[in-house]
Length: 96
Ligand SMILES: [Zn+2]
Image (tube, rainbow, N blue to C red; front, side, top):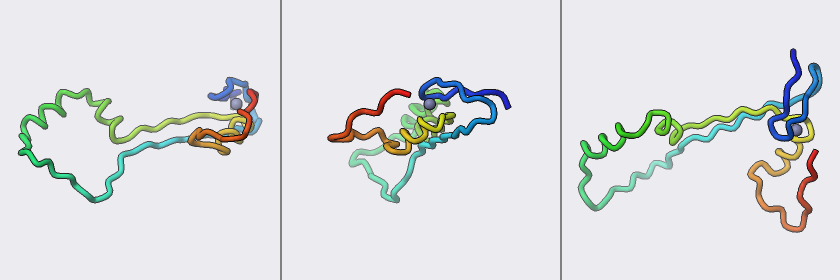
């Protein structure tokens, strides 16, 4: 296997060294509740609006997947705070 590059810090990961694959899937969910508008819906108009949207944008509204390669240090940083929430009282992570 050839060397890889960490997508977060750009460090080269030599062939045979430990690396991690990070796959993030974001997809639409449904809670079973349908909100009905008080005004009548023109189905043809709504369908025309959808048809006017580029197909790839429509697909991204429903499903998006990201695939990254991380070095061990960046894997630790990512796993410590995957949503990148503010960590009150903690200093920011040092760059690798
Ligand atoms: Zn890295």
